[in-house]
Amino acid sequence: MQHDILINWSPQETRVAVIENGAVQELHLERTLERGRVGNVYLGKVSRVLPGMQSAFIEIGLERAAFLHVADVWQRQEGGEPPGWARKGEPQVPIEKQVFEGQALMVQVIKDPIGTKGARLSTQISIAGRLLVFLPQDDHIGVSQKIPPAERDALRARLQTLAGDKAAGGGGGFILRTNAEDASDAELAEDIAYLRKTWARIREAALRRPAGSLLHEDLNLLQRVLRDLVAEDTQTIRIDSREQYDRLRDFAREFMPASAARLQLYKGERPIFDLYSVDEEIARALGRRVDLKSGGYLIVDQTEALTTIDVNTGGYVGARNFDDTIFRTNLEAAQAIARQLRLRNLGGIIVVDFIDMVREDHQAAVLSEFRKQLARDRVKTTMSGGFSQLGLVEMTRKRTRESLAHQLCEPCEACGGAGQVKTPRSVTYDILREILREARQFNPREFRVVASPRVVELFLDEESQHLAGLSDFIGKPISLQAEAAMGPAQYDIVLF
Image (cartoon, rainbow, N blue to C red; front, top):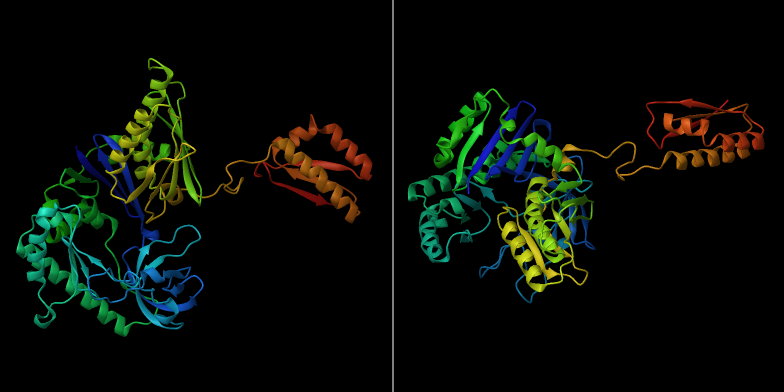
């Protein structure tokens, strides 16, 4: 599979598109004034402990207090159990016995603030390098699960030798990343030294800086592209800024030499995102409807609680019979849905309503194709066993940052994010009721209705009889004023 990365850089924003087989699969955005904070390490201050929720609010200098759950409080344990969790059969230590109000606590952001929720924190620090992830509070040596099991023991032994022990100035745990499978001992030793120096700087800063201070900032998006997005099948990494190309090339040569050869400066006359119509893909990814090549379509509705995806046959009638039409539409939809999840960066609970299929072999084939497509996603996804009793597929996708729509859009001022507004006729009746209510409380000389042109036009035409009848009933004149700047459901009633 051909895999390319395009980087569009400007002083205010960096945009990254991941292209697979000529189609846009992922979009990553970072704005200079709105940088993400996942991976950042802070010296926080506990502002409130909530025993009932087994959590605490931590002030780290952001607009909203961050959130620390007891499951993310690191505890040193013997016997190889994962830090932060109680041993099997033993109760977890309550959070009120681990942290207290006013305490200074070193924490790391594991989820950016999303919507009205503050950032989520962990007290287990991890620092990602080019080849390794450093766990300074732990002694565990691990190997990525994506590396074949037959090779893990040998790699773990090599890493254990290179990391050394505490007596020799070592200490800390390491996880060997997938791209370190073929790394030399010299490269691993270099990454170990870099990560330990970084941790030493963090500890030193924690001793001299006040609570709420940033101790360590994660790499920017350009650098994370090399660290996290480049894979073995990545052909090219093209960037359209000479200055950023030089910086990224120097960074790659120092930390990720294998990626340096793939870097290219884009010099074309057309904008780099025009090569694969990326801007058009972004515009389509912000809409509800996704058209399928066969004539079918998806309807994607994103809410705060979950995302629903509905599959429809639309105008597709190409198969021999109705069952085959549904089956082919659902197969194509399985591929399109997996792509939309990545493209829109949808996370949390996701419910997919495929078109009902009678044959069990068709159901199994669609589920198999859906799982196959989800396996290509770098973000963790978990799918239920199959179709529910209502014929739905339920799944979750790990949410680590805002979705594309939440990054680029805001609630509509006219509808308040509801996605719909009252009809002009409904608004006219609201206005008539409001005038009657005001007339019972006040005794003005005149009522003036200020509303959108469509509402005023309706009052002058079809609703003129009702308006005149109300005027006669209250014994006061009612005048109209059209205001183009007003939304469909907005109005004012002015008393003179």
